[in-house]
Amino acid sequence: MLLRAENGLAKNAIRPIRKARDEIRLRLMQLTIREKAGESISLL
Image (cartoon, rainbow, N blue to C red):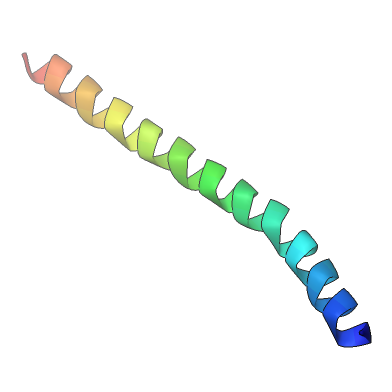
C-alpha cells in the first residue's frame, strides 16, 4: 500500500517536469526553425 502511494507521488512529481521539458524542447525547435527561416530569407 505504502509503496503504491509513493509511486503515485513520484509519478505526479515527474509529470509536470516532463511536461516542462517537452515545452522547452518545442520552444528550442521553434527558435531553430525561425533562425533557419531567417537565414534563408537573408540569403535571398
